Image (cartoon, rainbow, N blue to C red; front, side, top):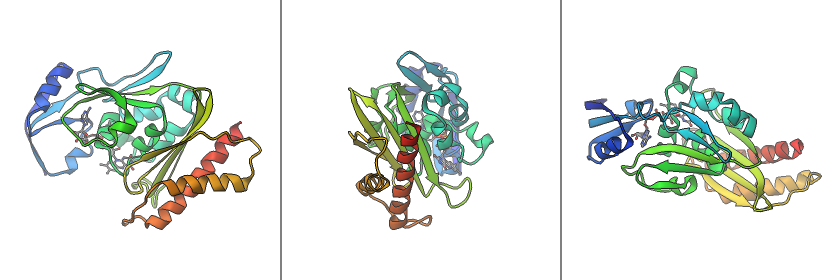
Length: 266
Ligand SMILES: Cc1cc2nc3c(=O)[nH]c(=O)nc-3n(C[C@H](O)[C@H](O)[C@H](O)COP(=O)(O)OP(=O)(O)OC[C@H]3O[C@@H](n4cnc5c(N)ncnc54)[C@H](O)[C@@H]3O)c2cc1C
């Protein structure tokens, strides 16, 4: 059970940060995960009045406020135009619509959950996090940091012509994924680059990058070899949802499918 002493709606990010420095303070996102835990919270800090619930776009970036819900991510037309169905595909299996209307992007990324579809998807893109105290850092760096008392303000995705695919396998609908993969390709500094993330291994998502120039008429055998090479780069573990060996096999299959799908698009 969770016990909360004081509830404060922060008026500014500074206030939220200051309050959060106390040992028993916690920031709340949608509370969907936190409410299932056991904790005595002295001060619960609500960020909902800080205007962090918008997806903004400039010429160069998408800026997703930490309090945006997973449903906003799923329904954002501009993200769909830019990255196809991949972003919606990454979140649409998460529990149900009512749940996704409450769970936040900030809580999902701050939590750095091993099973996270959201983290797996966003890590494959050119993504940064904006922290109140820590400034703007790459998501790939943030993911390996220990949780601290900073406040996550937004997620920033740098634009660029990228193709994005997301695939996951679940034993039953709405369960945690057994494995989750994202594959992204684009031209970076004039060279074709491929980005692969695999999450729910069951460890949290990790990223592998390759400067591959894959011809459109590449053989199926060569694509399989690429997929095997990438799947072998990650470590896998065993839990009640699947063995390490099964997960490695699934990752290879999903990566191969995603590469084929991107190449077919041309
Ligand atoms: C039953 C269930 C099934 C789920 N299934 C999936 C799934 O299949 N795939 C998937 O990807 N996810 C899944 N999730 C996770 C879910 O999508 C959210 O990631 C999770 O609920 C956290 O989001 P929240 O907004 O509820 O955060 P909260 O529960 O409010 O907070 C989570 C943590 O993040 C901290 N936090 C929140 N916001 C901030 C911030 N702005 N700055 C600093 N710290 C912050 C909190 O203090 C807390 O430690 C599941 C969750 C549940 C409960």
